Length: 385
Ligand code: HSE
Image (cartoon, rainbow, N blue to C red; front, top):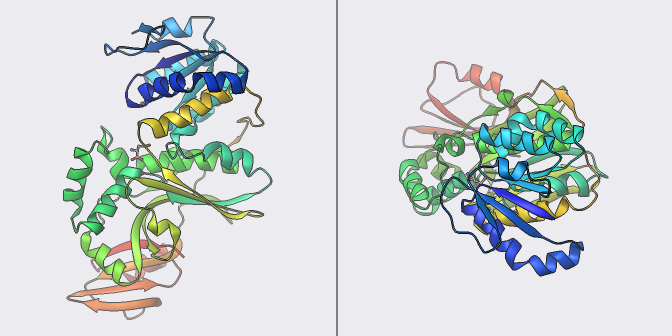
């Protein structure tokens, strides 16, 4: 098997290292040579002996000996060209590019199918956690009802720091940024877009439909205050950025929003930059995938597994139907912080502190709740349960 790696950043070098270190075992296990023929990057890099360095990805795509192209440059412009050109040249493709799969999955999968080659993207969701393929292949006996979890490590790190170190959002963000957690475009993390890319990918496989990414209602963590975290804690909850996709009566609901989770719930105890995905289905009931969602070796582990998977038969294709409607999930319990008491509110828990009135409502439609809150200033988050 000849491999060409395009993009030699943190993850790219992790892939080179793992494939070099594990070469003998992988060759034995898969009964094939495992050769990194090319490494492609615009930066000058030093590669282990035997790997051809190029700055032009066409060298890889036009080489008939290359079987697998690994795209690790990210973004949705050049990366898209690379992937489509590679597939059209009859090469298998492995990518960690969540934005690209979320936005252009349909075109990419159709191109792969037309050329009878494979496209794998396990590293796009949950870093190294095996979730994309397991949710598709290993749960195939089940109908999936719901997928829910923490899919963005950066925001989870920031929320954890706000709680444990008593910091406000901006202070925690500065620390996360200093540690290199935050994406170059911080909005991807902070506004929930990265988590939306990931839940869209999981939902696509679980529900066998392509969804319109722009219809996913996405709220990030910029409005989560230390004060709300403290009030939530007093009530036995933690605030987490939750991405969810589930079957509703009228179709598929999907959203990303800061959500209060009971401290007794496993998901509330997933801290730092860790990710968790909980899948609810009809026979297996609940299954939880937990682990590190980012990092050099963590992500490279998923990429290398995908590379090796191109060498064996698989049971799944991407011939999904297109679904233009994605609905927000609005029927929920809500946390409300308001400066006025809310006399008509149907609530489960209430307390008042300083000038704040804090409620956990019973299940209610968001529209009905907002009607009751009309002309009041309030803070509102979903509550799981
Ligand atoms: N920015 C992403 C995160 C990186 O924080 O989870 C991994 O996809």
